[in-house]
Image 1 (tube, one colour):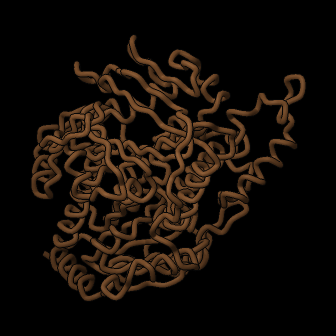
Image 2: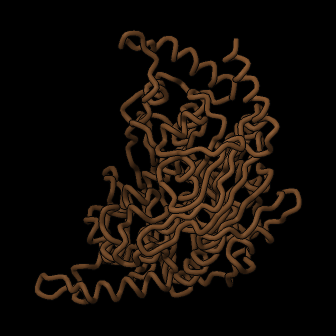
Image 3: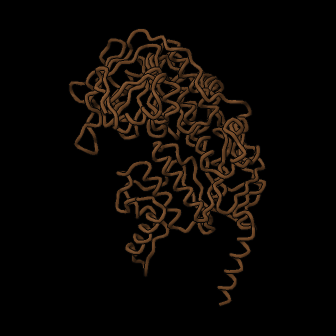
Length: 530
């Protein structure tokens, strides 16, 4: 009875205190950099609080301190007004704090259910009570509209469903403070909309949400308040209802940002890339992932492949770059030469630059240094080697120049391990490497994924400059604003086929959406059919 009374008194005291979490004067240092410099953050009960900042501003670091992954050099954390110590994620979970990381922490060969209960498995005398756990997971899934199959294997489900699995992991542990680190970076527009609704539902249930994002539209739609960091320092906290995108972006990068791409009309010249009857088999179903696709891209133009994720874009790019084999009868012609069966290195050294979709799998060797990653496709060139020995002084000089030109931020400059860098700065490193190489064709897949508005503006300028210097650009993007602003021509891919060619100057987002959803289709001889 006394215990019940004590619990009620604690709950009553907690409900009177305005902040469920306070991080006061947090300072966190790494070699060569102060990631968080005397930052204070206050989270109200039941609010969605956005954390906004440039790549490398210290957002993920601050949340990792709250989740117990890092220990701060200075500062204190309070839960419901009482000082707490968080030495590791187990302490965070015990305090009701959960986190969905930017790169998910799931065991791919386990089922959804096994991932959710991992570490907190219900058992009696060492025997798992999976039936009980499954019931709770299904109830939570239905209650919050997550609709995840608990028996599905994680590697077989979409990225959006993997994220929902991470959310269920938090809810299963009864977390009341939910941290979302860049939750929309890998989602389709439809999945983003669904996630926004899920977050609003969680907040309405009394959960308190910390939401790291670069995307101002999302913050304006879903957040109640927003705290802005810049270069590790606290800039300010604003009520979203009193803010504008322009105001937030200026706080974030310290200058005004252009939200539209500044570019002259395209001046297309000779054909650089010709694709004839490209077909790629699917690894997951009997239909072809890419089915008999033909297209061309000319020097001096940006052609965008638009479509909802999972409609063959990834397999299409993999076949072009040599990561997957095309079926017999397919041909890829680069500047008049058939390169369909050529090696990846041959394609790289003969004019193709590739910004890959997955920066960790195909863009970087994470345990190599930044300078080593910047010369991955060039270390064998005369500039960087002599009689088989790498000239490390030349590599260092080259890396320093690229880091400065593309504003790649890292704690120890060129010797920083790629794994330790923020996702946005990893992306900038890849873009620096690929754009700096002499290329006739730039294949850019989701080039601004995970980048802040200042970096997006810069990267768009670089892609346009590449076009204007005479390169052909093949852009693959899920971001409709990027598709409309950056493209000179739009080709829509649906179920592995090109179903429409659109002019961004005359089409609308609504029309583009109809093609992407398969509700509208051109006969590709000039007419339309619904």
